[in-house]
Amino acid sequence: MPMAAMSITDAAADRLRSLMADKDGVVGIRVGVKTAGCSGLAYTMEMAEQVNKHDEVVEDKGVRILIEPKAVLFLIGSEMDWEEDKLQAGFVFRNPNEKGRCGCGESFHV
Image 1 (cartoon, helix red, strand yellow):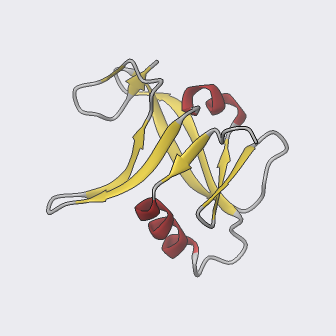
Image 2 (tube, rainbow, N blue to C red):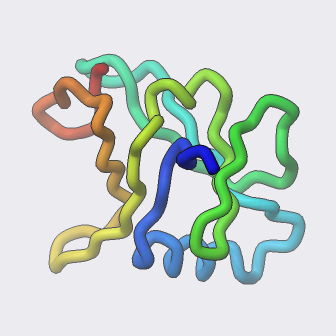
């Protein structure tokens, strides 16, 4: 069986399931990249109401992740996590394809 394009941690799966629990019509979380910031690319996430024809579908820990076609090559081997501390909480991507990040952490390049 081929390796999934990306994976999620237990913490990320728990958070995603809770976010989608009361959302009618949501079939998964769509993940992508967009041109942004000083390093070039930024991650995007949104609730998806349908699977698009060319989405890469990853089922992991009871969560369906839909990866936009243009983002697959940037995200191969990535892991999505949910981290919380006293100052912030949010999804974090650990991406082996990243070659660098901008100083503020908002964008990355490959």
